[in-house]
Image (cartoon, rainbow over all chains, first blue to last red; front, side):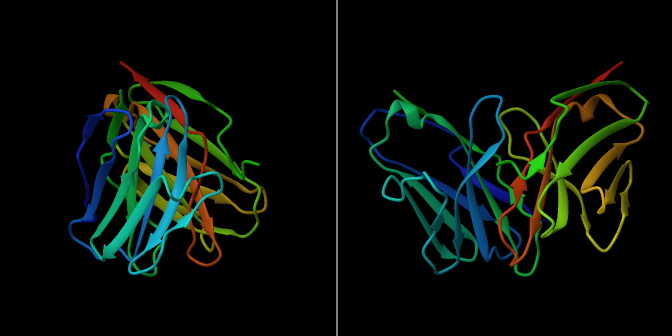
Length: 115
Length: 112
């Protein structure tokens, strides 16, 4: 149980374009989903927290207009990187958490490369 | 200000021996602790957790110990296997079902 999928697993896009990443909880209802970014040889950096049906809460320093997060249902959240630039190239990972629990279950990650 | 610290960036252990990973925290509001394992280019995998009302939790080869007075927890892996080679993250949570605070991770290498 507790499977989280992410799509796509990798994407290459041109500078200035937008990219959407999907995160799905496959076998449980995710009342809260989280989006992280990981730089090489570094720990996970939380970008934002989203509760189903509510606006996302962004961490300090994360541009909400650049990283658009939607959590429209209990099984799906999306992260859209708008007007992507090479510095946005990174490994993006989502996680999902059910109601009343601390455990977050992570997706496999999406490698974004902006050329 | 890092509230969860894993001071050992790497650990090398022989196959069959015990791996001990350590984690310290500073925030006394944390009341739930988790360990995750991560392979390169993959998302972290949940391993084991412990509530602050306990001092030990065991699941197969994995045991987590919590010392609240020292604000310290450890993960024991016995016996270590080659497939255990990965980065291990300690995480802590507390308060209103909020976000996890992650440590920097410890790279474990299990040698034959």
